[in-house]
Structures are given as structure tokens and as C-alpha cells.
Length: 512
Image (tube, rainbow, N blue to C red; front, top):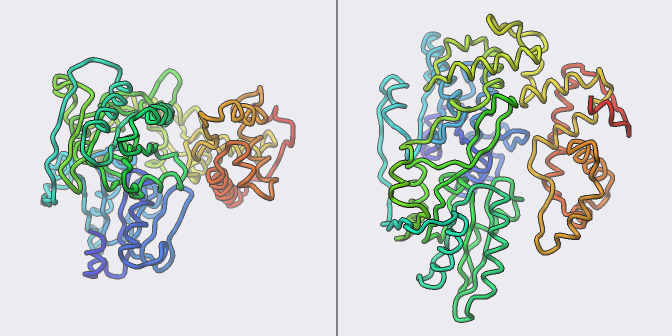
């Protein structure tokens, strides 16, 4: 779609923005489109995700996460850099997606009032509730594009067993009885996938030599990029790939060669715990729309088969659509952003209004952080304005702004950078004892934060960090990314005139 718009010149002299809910999708699709157009990534086609900008003055097609465009709206509510905005995968209904819908709608209204060039908005999804979105955008037209689809047979499990065991059993049966074709298995999270991959690899060693070899891969957002690329490479002859993935593989990425899908019917979803005041990930049933998306993965390039490890009765009891995150997540960052934009959160046009208790909880948290004047009549404080300058959870922003008082800004910058990236520790079932010994060198009885600080400080002293990371079972790429995040946060601190300070080896101020 963006290529058609670009080639037709419909964007004029402005950039075409395409948003994705997931970071990995924004990067992967940008790379694919750049390759298709014969462009270097960062030239005509680029991407921007949190703490990573691969664009230039030449960029005309810009992929980004929903949150990035929301942050751009903090300084430009009219979104004047764009004449065309494409919101993709809106059915995922993340908090950032829902806020962005309201931001884009308001930008259209402001432009119309000021008689500016109109902002054209395209909303795309394979499974969204079209009527709901069309009604929200003043009964805008709905266009259905029929893609080339193949037939997918669906089998539901009758026997009751734990979903992980059911998935493993199904993969073994497919490999032993079904024709050639790769297998995509949906599980819920990184630890579960890593454990299941190791178990599957052990099982594969016992298969008959008459069967094709089985190449087993994990796939989740925190996986190092080199390992992610392995998933997309075609399998050699006489080898069948089996990929254990999170819901990232529902829509965000396409893996060629998939003929069989095994769906556990569950995913990890964000929810807010009002007791701890924190978001957490919980394993929960997916929606029927998600089940349909997963089934479709088997029919991308040929007829396929989907095996659901749950009954038809269980499927019938699933929600039809995925519940919006905004109905069940911490809204403190959302409310803070709206206040920075000068928007009254009570009047903001949410496509689905968040619950009152969610808004009150967010206001109470912001008041506790001194980001607003009061809960009853919230006005952004000077501190709150500074907190919003950081692309962080408000609690992390407050930590940075409070650090100079305790003389430990440099240490807090490191810790927050490490917490803001992907996991730095690698797992190795084959070398578990060596891994535990290597990791134990960094442990600190004060807690995980000081452990992360120890790892980073040691990492920065190494002249050959790649080899050091390999020897210590650490992700070199994730540590390098944490260093980049730290640098960007440090630049924001300088812009806000926050004085640098360090507590050295004395970590007591950090704990305070």
C-alpha cells in the first residue's frame, strides 16, 4: 500500500507514515519494502522505533511503532510531517494504538478547521471490527481486499492434556505421518518456548532415520536478530522446520514454507494489578479473531492444516475479538502524554473509553510522583513536564530526575537503559552449569538492579566484547543496544540541565 501511494505521488512532498504495534514488525517490514524498492534501508524507506532511528532526510516511507507517532504528536498535534498515515494491525488494540486513533482523528479535525491540506488516514487489519472503526471515523468507507488464499483444514483436539504436551505430541504426529511442509507452533512466552524447543530437539534425536531431519527454532521478540533470521531461511532438502513462536507470528511476520499450524489457544496478555501498581503478563485464552489469524498462517502459499489443541466447545466460548489493552492496563503514561498535549483526558475521544478506576489509578500514581497538581483537577507540574520528555514509564522518568539528589545519575541511567531493552542473559540447556557459574559472577545480594549494573560496567571495559559476552552467556547485541539507550537518555538529561553524578562502588544511594 505505501509503495502504491509513493509511486502515485499521493503523499506530495511529505512522508508516508506506517505504524505497527510491534517493534519487530516495523523493522522487518521496513527492511522488506526497502529491498523490494531497491533502496538502502534508511534512504527512501526507513523506520523509527523506541531508541532506534533508521531514517534520513530522503526518507519518504517511514515505518514506526504506534508509540513513536504518539510521541511526535506531543510536539505537533497536527502531524504536519505527513499527508498520509497508515495504521496497520489495529486489531491488536494496544494502548498506543487506541491513543493514536484519537490523536490522528483530532489532527484531521484541526487541519480541517485551519483549512490545511487534509490528512488521509488508512486503517488496515485482517480481522478488525470494521463497523466499529468506520463509525469512529464518521462512517468512513470500508474497502475489502480479497487476497489469494488457500484452503486450511482445521482439527480440534478432543483429548484433554496440558497444552504444551499436546503441542509436542501433535508436532511428533505431523512429522511422522504428514507430507512435507514446515510447522509453526504457537506458545505463550520466551521461557516456555525455550524449554519446549530443547525438549523437541531431544525428541528429534530418537526419530527414525527414514524420516526427514527436524530443525527446531524459537521465535519471540527478544530473540537476537541473527537467530530471528534463521527462522526465515528456507530449510535444506530433506529437512523439516518446526518453529515455536509467540503471537508475534500471528500477523507481524510471515514465514514462508509453513504448511502446518499447531495452536495452543493461549497467549500472554498485559493486565494491571492495582495492588502492586504494576502491569504484568498473564497467560490467557486468545480470541476467535486471533485463532482465525493463526489458522491463516498455514494457508499463505499452499493448502494447509491447523491443529488446535483445544476443543470446539472451548473455541465457541472464546471472545469474538481481542479485548483492548486500554481496558485492563496502567494508564499513567497515557494520561501524562495527554496532559502534555494540552488535552483534557475526560474529553479525549477514545474509540473505547477506559474504565473510571483505571483513570483514577493513573491519576493517583501521577500525583504520588508529583507529576500533577491534584487528582481532582490534574494540572501538569514542571516536574511532570520534564518526566514526559523521556520515552519511559513515568516511574523510570522520576527515578532519573531524582537521581542527582542522591548523587547517582550515572548508575540510574545504566540501570534504566538495561531495563528498557531486551534480556541480556542467554540460556543454554547444554551448558547449564557453566552458564550459572558465569552469571553468578555478576550477582549482587542487593538485587537484580545492581546485578545489571555490574554486567554493564564490566561490558564497557572490554576491548573484545563479543568474545567476552559469548564466554559469559550474555547477549552482546542487547548490551550494545542498552549502551545506545543510555546515551540517548543521557542526552535528554543534558538538555534538561540535569547535573551528572556518580556514587562509584557505593550502591547504597542507588537503593535509596
